[in-house]
Image (cartoon, rainbow, N blue to C red; front, side, top):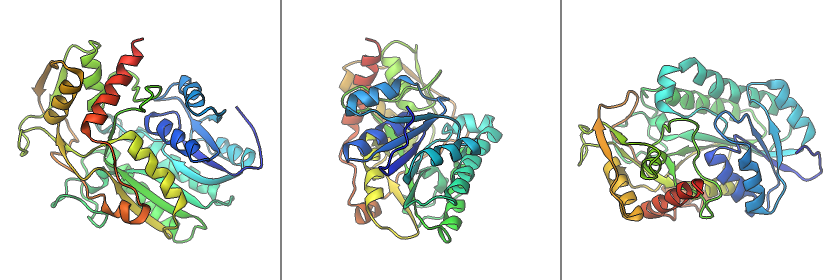
Length: 338
C-alpha cells in the first residue's frame, strides 16, 4: 500500500519480521501511523494482513532492501517520516560465522544508507535494534550499559558494535536523537497467536526449535554444549518476551534522552537451555526429545543484563516471565498447524 499523507509517520524497517511485527502492533496501539519496509528475506508477506487484522488498520508497506539507497530516498519522498526504528538486519550468530561479508553488507551498509538519506530529511528520533552481543563474554555479570564492548566471536556481534560506533559518531552532529536498544534474547509470541517467530528453513534460535520439536516437525532438539562452566553445563541467556521488548520501542519514542543513549532490554535473570526446556515441558505437558552435542562456534557460555537503566530512563521493565514466554510460543506453534 502506497500513500503520501500529511500525518507524520514512524518508519519501521524489517517491520514484517519477528520483532518488527510485534513493534508494529505496539506502535499502532499507541496511536502511531507507521510505514513498514521489508525485503521478505526472513519474513512473509502474509504477516501484513495479520497486522491489519490485529490492529484494524491498513498499514503502509514498501517492499525493498535497505542497501538500495534509491529505494530509501523514494520512501522518504513519499512519506513524511518523523521517527525511524531500524530493525532490518541479519541476526543469526552461527550463519554470520559462515557468511561474514553478507552480514557486514546488510547490517552495516544498510545502516549507513539509511543515515545518509536521513541527512536530507527532518526526523526526531532514530531507534536502533542492537544486541547484548556487543559485550562479548564480559568479565562481570550482569552487564550494564557502561560495560565495555568485548571481543565478540561472531561477525554478527561485530556488526552491532560497528553500527553503535557509527551511530555514536553521527549523534554528535545529527539533528535527531539516537537510541540503541541492546536486546537480550527475545522469545514468545503475541497473545493472539496471530504473529510470532516464523523462521525460514531450519531455526537458528532455541525456542522455535523447541516448539517445532514439540510439534513433531523436528525429530530432536540439539543442545549445543553441555560442558560450559554453568550450574547445569548448558549456556545461560537472559530471555525476554517479545511483547515486552516491543513496548520499549514505543516508550523510546516518547522520552527525550539526549543525543545518544544505549539501553539494555532484558529481564535481569539468566536461564540455562535446560531450564528453558523444562519450562516448555511443563507448559506443553510433554517430554521433549533432545540431546547434548558439541558447542556451536560463536556462542557465549553465559550472559544476562541489568535492565535498571531502561526503567530509570523509559519507565519500562519486562512484565512477562519464562512460563508466559513458553506458553505463548507454544500457542503460536500450535496455531501454525491449523
